[in-house]
Structure formats: structure tokens, C-alpha cells
Amino acid sequence: MLDKAQIEAIIPHRAPFLFLDRVLELVPGERCVAEKDLSPDEEVFRGHFPGHPVFPGVLQVEAMAQAGAVALLSVLENRGKLVLFAGLEKVRFRSQVRPGETLRVEVGLVGLRGPLGKGEGKAFVGNRLASSATMTFALAEGDVA
Image (cartoon, rainbow, N blue to C red; front, side, top):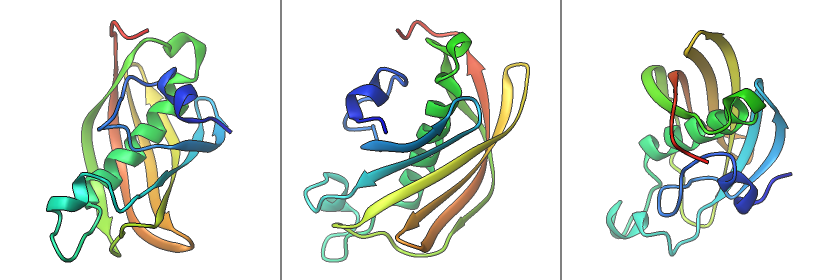
């Protein structure tokens, strides 16, 4: 299990745009399962939506992408690189995610050819599927430590 500091040592994301609190499972280069505790105090809930707070679907996809980046950048030869979105397919939002819930994201890397690859992601609250997506990514040289 990785905590937030260990996640930050792998990917360049930082608050307020880091959407992983801990990694529960990690197979470098293959798979990552991570969680984000959605505190009612999260800034995003102030404006999305007042009186009916919902964690945005696009941020659920971003959490999936960050978990995929942890899996990809955990491979030693990928350290210090950037993982960038190159495309999204089959994105589905199935249920609302609310303050006080824990979002669990599961991502499997399904292909890497040169600098391009794909990941299959799902986001859950408990056993309830909240969203899913197929993400295409580009692995780029970066100046990230």
C-alpha cells in the first residue's frame, strides 16, 4: 500500500489536482487500484452543485488516469516521464458520487506500443460502478523527478 507522499514520489500531480489518497494494489506496468476519500470540505463540492454536491465525472476519469500513471511510472525506465491523455473512448457515467464517500479506481494497462498505450479504468463506490473509460495515453519525456 502506498500513501499520498509515496504517490507524489511517482506522479507529478499535486493538490488540488491529486485525486488519489492511497494505492491498495500495484503491479508496475500492469495494474493499479487506488482510493480517494471525498471529504465534504473538498473545494469542488462548493460549486458542483450547491445544495446537491456531486463529484464530477470528468474528475473520476482523471482519478483513473492518475492510477494508470502510477502503474506506468512505477516501472523504473519510465520514472521522470509524463503520462498525457491522448484520447478517451467508451466513457460512461453510471451513478453519482457524493461527499463522504470513498472512490475506488481500478485501472489495467492493456497495451503499450512505443510512447502510446491504453488503459481500461473503472471507478466504484463500494460495489457500485460509478464510471468507466478506455483511456489512450502518450508517454512523454519530462523534467519531473
